[in-house]
Length: 189
Length: 366
Image (cartoon, rainbow over all chains, first blue to last red; front, side, top):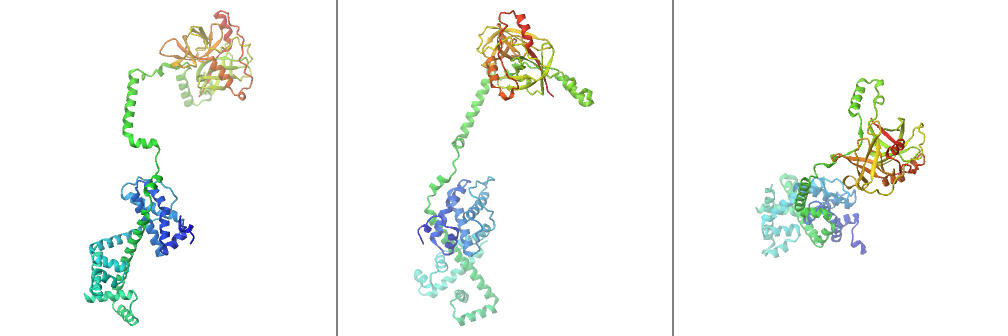
């Protein structure tokens, strides 16, 4: 790859390929390219920089997940798409905070987007549940579960880390932890 | 408990593809046979996926945060914030102080005006010398006409002219000057000479600022006048000069005379003179002459509070207006030069000569 394609605003197809290939570089360039646009939208519509960060990351995650699951179809410019999602999210946030004055200052053209943010919301709720379930689970269960299922560590490694005498003990511990995690997760409303 | 763990382990190994072929076949058979195990497999798969996705999400958020930390958000914010203009900022920061200051200022101005008597509406003391004739009668006639709707009672036939003023010739070929307020909103304007003949005219030029209007007699029956007996005095006239005017506040000519008492008009208006003369409504538009018969102004208005104070627009503004007429609105050349043949004559002789050049202006409008 030449140097020019490694910096600056990535093309739309570059972004999609980059996300599919887990490219750190593309993600970074994507993030840097459109953040100012969203910052401008939010801070000029009753928001602060932290709001802008939240909204923008949420939108990037929506895009990321859509691309990953393969149901992303780019019907407009990526820039417009991101702006539209952020605009929608920010309007929702403003309404929730009762700060929505009835109009919003726009800086870009935008499309009407709806369902995607809703879907994402549901997933967020699941993730929040999972987060608090893991929190309640406590140590060492939390780390064991995370190491095994998320960080893909082997039972052997976990065994050594926690000082279990043999892998079978660690395994038994792991299943106990998983059992409790399930219970905690499904208990939540 | 341990049985349960074994099952979970089997499910995991099955899902991860770690089973040997015979083990796998055996497990699949078990799955097919026991619906509860099949359900457990699906549940476990779903749950582990959720755990993994949750992990991925955390990881992604961590990555995004790392990228975000590289951005100088504060500098960007400065750059992208739409800064309202200084007026708006000033207002936002100081609006309470500004409001208080403004209220005090308004209150101070109003109380000053009140105590100095300015609010006693001096405007009412000033009225244009416009003769309003038969306003009530006209209304009544109109009503009557509408009611009867008879052709013999058309308003034109009964309408003697709504307003009346005075005008005087500024050339021999039918150009006449009067006040703009006399002919304002007019549908048609007629002038009537001293001998009783009435001519139709057209308004060729108006200058509302100085209250000057120039009419042209368009009537074919009009015969050019003899050379003007007066000249237009370009320079300012001194205070104390004896002045006089003639005009038509009623059907006969009426003389008004007095002294030039001020070089400015109403409220210090420098375009006007103030004179002491008993004038009436209807004198508006008449010529103001000095004792030698030079025209020094056009009668314009009077002060209603002080009897005998009237105003006249200075001749220099008339000459300016004549000069400002667009040439394409003139059908004939306008030659405002006259030869003064009034100087040295006694007042009655002066008036006798003037009579033919001063007209009654009748204005009709519906």
